Figure 1 (cartoon, rainbow, N blue to C red):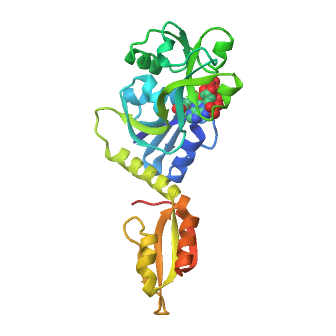
Figure 2 (cartoon, protein in one colour):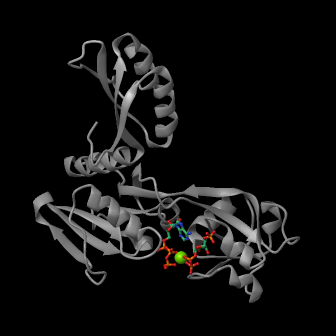
Figure 3 (cartoon, rainbow, N blue to C red):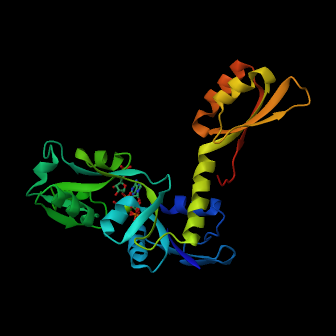
Length: 281
Ligand SMILES: Nc1ncnc2c1ncn2[C@@H]1O[C@H](COP(=O)(O)OP(=O)(O)OP(=O)(O)O)[C@@H](O)[C@H]1O
Ligand SMILES: O=P(O)(O)OC[C@H]1O[C@H](OP(=O)(O)OP(=O)(O)O)[C@H](O)[C@@H]1O
Ligand SMILES: [Mg+2]
């Protein structure tokens, strides 16, 4: 039975559960449920803190899990990324009161507060910078106001939290994070993990594409297919009226309306858009 760790709380939790649901797995109904068996899919889910997930996966206690790239790197555990999941995007940055620190080099000799001490210590050591890292559990933006640090290193998504504390980022991004599926390093990808990866890839594709159907005069089929080339090749069917053909192709969701405008201008009619519930390509 494949053992999968899922974030039980925090920013990644809801989106992870939704993705697994769309991938056809059983998901918990009650947030107090910590272990869930999905016998039909031969999978057991463990709802754990995202920070701990890399540790469990690295030690081989569970086969794979969903966590953030920043948490994976911070843990230093023997786990690797199988695939990115398209949500939970953020950056990891240094910040300070304006006028305190203009560059990463100026962190030398100062105190850096963070919940990601593994990540920050590695980053500073890589640059040969000596600084005191103060490990806090959260709300690190307040550490400067309270006088326990001069600089913070934290997750920045919209930047609202930093602005509210009168802080500004400096230096380059330490890293760009997002939700990832991870598995233990070394052991090759098992058939069961491969099925999970294919299912999750199917969810991502289904979210990024829509199905477009339209009718077009036969002499315009080539031009229409150039606008909607599909992933492999569009399906072209003859209509009862032999002057017209029906075309079916997947198109990127973000370009749906622009493509419909182009097709309409070309002479296509009866243009229909359908959501893709699931797919395997
Ligand atoms: N706006 C955000 N705030 C915090 N973490 C975020 C955000 N967006 C994405 N993430 C990612 O979520 C993960 C942090 O998980 P964690 O469980 O600490 O979430 P959290 O939102 O900080 O929850 P909590 O603070 O309630 O424990 C990291 O991988 C981080 O990059
Ligand atoms: O750039 P923003 O959109 O403001 O998001 C980033 C903030 O959100 C997270 O805090 P969270 O609410 O998880 O609290 P925590 O620091 O206690 O984990 C993170 O630690 C930052 O503080
Ligand atoms: Mg948090």
